[in-house]
Length: 127
Image (cartoon, rainbow, N blue to C red; front, side, top):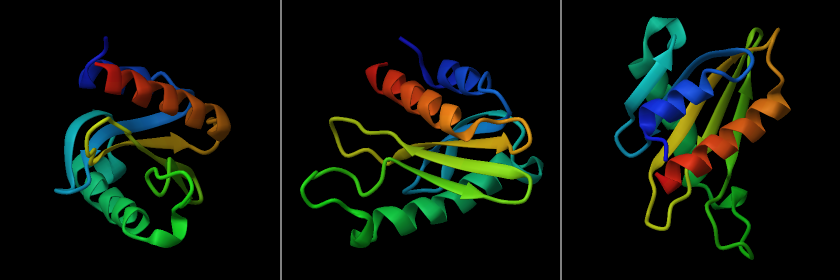
């Protein structure tokens, strides 16, 4: 079963991938990274993505009360040339990590990237 490094390497094979990291959203630290970070700095990107993740996870407006699950599966942020995809990693215990993937908007297929990142997150949980 894949570990953190293998999952990040797999994420980098997604068409258009610029950089990927596994982030602990309680601390804002990147637990692992591959490719290029935003502005060349994975740690700054992890901290910024953490602020978005916290806003989602701490807001009941995004929750589905009937599902009794995390408020969101993933978050997509678009900018002029980049897609930012945050995928929360669901675990049997209280998970506080997410996969953060940056994609080149000109070459990436956002729908396929979302599906692939979900599969990678599921594989990480089994590891």
